[in-house]
Length: 111
Length: 114
Image (cartoon, rainbow over all chains, first blue to last red):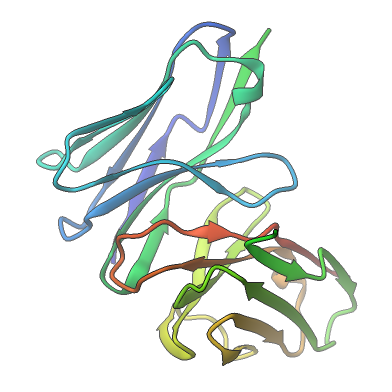
């Protein structure tokens, strides 16, 4: 089965700095890579996703890059704000909607 | 309107009891899931149903039995609860079953087994 590894497990940045979270996956059949933000006491919410036919996608301060050859993808958050503080999960999905999640990154943005 | 809802939000019970968690989605999605999130925040898929049919069962003990009365509902029944079942359980749904669509998560049910 698929194995998704996520690093770092915790990340502390100063407000205004950039944050980068990296994930690797093992199954080359995976073709959908979403990123979720989970705030305390809530369910994960999709913030951005990328499909295997695209190398990069951007949405305002958030961007995701995908390197299919190396089987890794990354989340980039620029100009971080305190409200970006949360746990972020990457995931990889393929047949029959089988989603495999990374272990999560706790992002702390210091004001 | 809540897209994916779960009840109850909190559930505290004794070992050996049987309990159920309910999930409903009003998005018209065909596929629904149950995930378990442990104390280290690791999210692991348990089950997936597409149009009321089981399509994924990730080696979950048979004490856990999902039930889908219709495609908008996927309930989770747990028999003979054990201490290790304590976790947050999330329901989720997607529009299609091709592994290429956004998942919408419910708010979670925190289960504590004493």
